[in-house]
Length: 328
Image 1 (tube, rainbow, N blue to C red):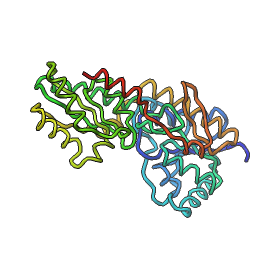
Image 2 (cartoon, rainbow, N blue to C red):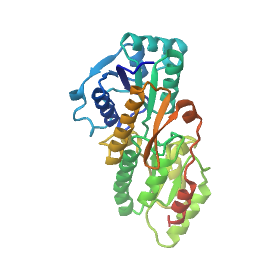
Image 3 (cartoon, rainbow, N blue to C red):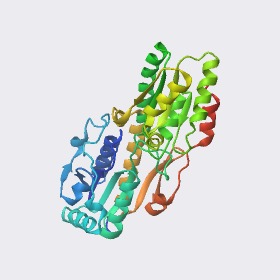
Image 4 (cartoon, rainbow, N blue to C red):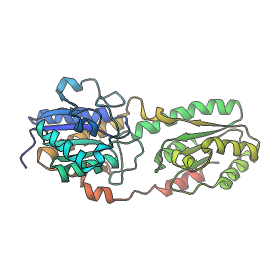
């Protein structure tokens, strides 16, 4: 395939701080290399419904510091069917789009793979998800900002927990991965951290609270990943009620929710997104698709998309052990 003359860029799945920084890098690197760029609105929906916008240098000015995504994002059921994929590919060809940068998670990458294999459009995936659960990369765009947002929110909750000698059960995002919960829990000095990768043990948690309370601790922070709460009838509210019923310590549950997706991206997210976006353009310029860009040991790398989707990522349980040992 000849070098791409026009490339597209889209964001898919849940939004993540730093997506705009990645869009900016893609647009400017592509234009620097003599290419045109079309933004695809609302993810794969935009491919199917011909929702394209031309992006120039100035169109991506003053977005590097903004959360969310200027291209918007949405789910697309049509794209899960071969007919939808072929329609999207045909629309790309009519618009002159020869390569596409897809910013999102594993589901978005599967769509990129299908568009390359079935539709003949070279696609490169960038890991954009706050959960940090993409196996081929040590780091995903949005993760650092989400952790810092969660940490700041829990720090504020601590003030009222301390004032009332209360236990705060704080639910953070992470349906299948406990990275936000683990790192936020350590950063705020949580008494207990519940992650999807470890079976939740109510007795173990209550034992830790009672032991610390007997040594004079008066207020507590419990961090629970969303995936753990979803597996318990009553969720985080039920956990808080159990703590109060068994220990006598007044307890409240707080679900941080989508606030963790918002806000200005941190330096880490802006830099990572820029470096990854630049690598994606380099690949498409060379006519290379079916790749996923990532970061390993601080270096930007890329993998075959099939290899990337088969990789397994493990929560660093040694870090969980550290958290457990210093939580008193």
